[in-house]
Image 1 (cartoon, one colour):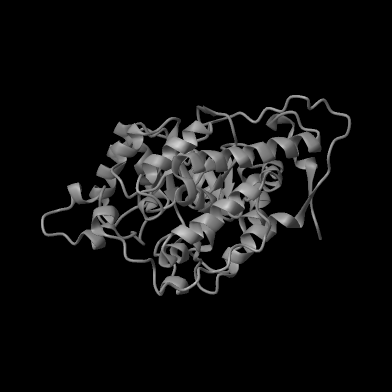
Image 2 (tube, rainbow, N blue to C red; image 1 turned 120 degrees about the vertical axis):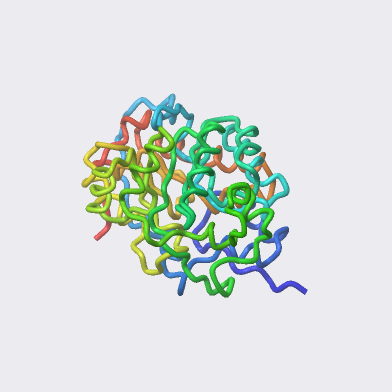
Amino acid sequence: MHAAPPESSEKPLLPLLAEHEQRARTVLDPEVVDYYAAGSGDELTTSEAEQAWSRFRLRPHPLRDVHVVETAIELLGARVRTPVVVAPTAFHQLAHPEAECASIAGTGAAGSLFVLSTRASRPIADIAAAATGPWWFQVYMMRDREVTARVVDDAVRSGARALVLTGDTPVLGRKRRVQGLRIAVPDDQFLVNVSPYLRAGADGREAAAQDPSITLETIEWLAARSGLPVLVKGVLRGDAADDCIAAGAAGVIVSNHGGRQLDRAIPSALALAEVVQAVGGRVPVLADGGIRSGVDALVALALGASAVLVGRPVLWALAAAGSDGVCDAVEALTDDLRHTLALAGCPDLASVTPDLVTRLS
């Protein structure tokens, strides 16, 4: 008999997101729920992520014409209807039989952008064939660099518009809920995009493990290999953002990996302003970590983010209702953002400026 699933977030969610999460916790195997929900260590960073956005207050503009509110933006040449984009998360087949194919289709139907994980559970080409909108490819640098190069080549051929290099995962964080690094994922999912390029006799799991020796030079290597812009995900410091840009990054993503890497890492909400200041408008800054409402998204945009990413809510939506669920989740967040923009007196994203937000002491 399965144990009861762990309790969901204490922070109120949009009704639809709450319904998705409740449904997902009912239909998924408890160990999958634990894997998706888990943070590293004592899960302090995971638990703080959502509440950190609540440390900010808004200073709305009265008497502004907001009878029409526009949420469309352009990200590195991709025009999308919303600044709420889908973060890279692993192994969607654990949530739904159609896996990332359903997720990418639902994201595009919502007018958003999808970031596909290296740890996808379907072939990249198959996922790309299901895309209904623009997508980027998230890169883990694996210990066998040639395997990484060939997987990146697949993403480029399949239509990825940018690469997202994860920089905060030299090794995987230990997660007590799953008694290790991750739950058992079958080879046909874990190695689906890696196995065609393994050397004869190579241990696939070892070759596909994270390379802890990579440095800033990886940014230039990826850009040269792919011909695509490279963003760096996992930036929580201003000086780190500056280093990444100097090394060729076309954007940075303020992220603590959903609390799944270094526990007690600063919440993205509290790191964002420093990173934005250091970047100084040279490249786009995106942010993820605990975005669960339009108000959260508006705070991030006012702090200087060009867009926000959501991860776990998409997995819950996928498990609850497949592609339609993913579409509905992104649309619900976008609609909540549109409503919040109107209340704040902002008819579009260009009118969201830093003076709109203040942090509580």
